[in-house]
Image (cartoon, rainbow, N blue to C red):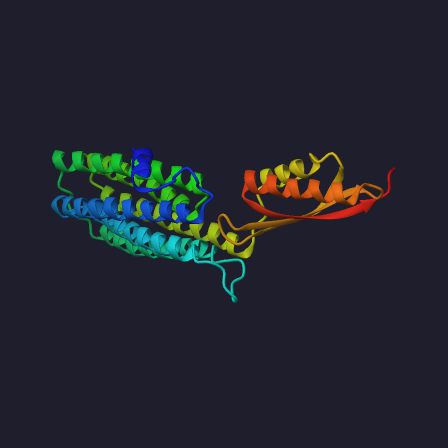
Length: 307
């Protein structure tokens, strides 16, 4: 379904290296997230009050935080696509990483709030009202969250978006949480201990863990994490594919945001090689790296003696 939606609403959707196309993907995923999470929040809040379940109400407010996440994702996509200026010569791509960090703070705060509510429910337990209709509605919400996980993961991989990857992780946590609520409600019919409060405790723990992991990933990107080993390997392979390249060293990769990665490397060439031929070959390698990996490559020639 997501592929059909993409084709309908994103022009030139296959050109994911285009900044405007990438922005359109971010906006589309954010709008879908707002619509889905608003629907889930409303449904779960009503069901939670009907069932008198703090776990369901907690899950509802988790969906409300997800709605805020989707709004931030839209702003992140818009801001990160701003062109370079005098103060930011490498563009504004890291706004996406900042947006992911803000999302993690929201997730973390909601988790802490719901943690307190769950403890209160354990200390002062109340009977949870079983309703077959409510259980069915919750199962439908699970299916919707599975779809949200699927499309966020798909878009996250397609455009290399940390925001979408965070949204996908949060969505699959919601699936686990809602399934836990359903199981807790069913078990609670036959148990005397506050299963509902315990399930709320587990849900809040999942939310806090997701917030922590999301924050860690975004901070790593902002500080400059070690590049993907596969990227390093492929860059070296492409450079060494040149017939006049004898070796490489000092590869440096700088991430200024998705689609805004620059790199430099020293390529060893024979000291008596034709400099014009080598220069042309290096230009072609830089172009190949850009086309395949989307990285702006700068290759420095290092003359070495034939040995």
